[in-house]
Amino acid sequence: MLASLFEGMLFGLPFVLVIGPALFAILQTSMNKGFYSGMQLAIGISISDWLLMLLCYYGLAQYMQNSKFQMSLGFIGSIFLLGYGLYIFIKKTPTITKNKEIKLNIKWGSVFSEISKGFFLNIMNPFLWVLWLTIITTGTANKNRIESLLFILGIAAILFASDVLKSFFANKIVKMLSPKIIAKINKMMGIVLIICSAVLFVRTIIIIC
Image 1 (cartoon, rainbow, N blue to C red):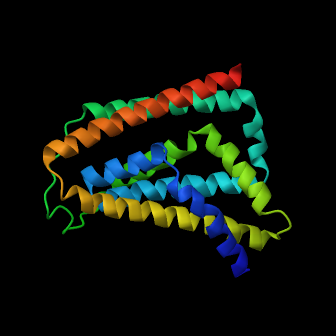
Image 2 (image 1 turned 180 degrees about the vertical axis):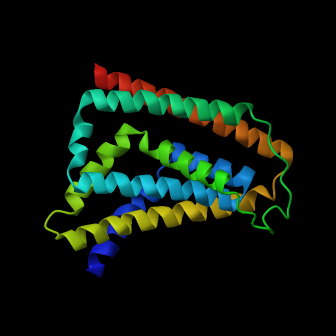
């Protein structure tokens, strides 16, 4: 059974290096709000990955092959990304202090907000559904239920661990940068997310055609 867990981790390794909206969101959040906020965003992304993979495993993802559903999710996702990108681009960069995270003050409203943001940022991408459908269908073939769930756990675990590491290092690096450079990075990440929104919108249009 442990073999299935490690197999899932190996399957997930290539996706650690995938560059997409979730990666930029984690980096931007960690740089501006700290490691714990970035980790909360990663938790939301991980929950959505878990949900998508389980839906694929239990056969519910067949509905994702419906072009109308993909179109609706794609349009909503592109609007969400556009709004988030504009927010990052326009918002004034907060002052980063070296002792920002010495005290861990848990504000549950903020925690829920970051987790929800990560969840919807990830799950609103219809092409991610198709990706997980392919991987889960291939990876769980000839496996029983326990082995399949361990396989899924392995993928989710390696992705979550990598997101947490990205958040940690982004927060460490930002402390070595000047406020002007941080502001420029925020602008750049906002533009990248807006571009991701446009790409998702165009790809969704292609589905219709």
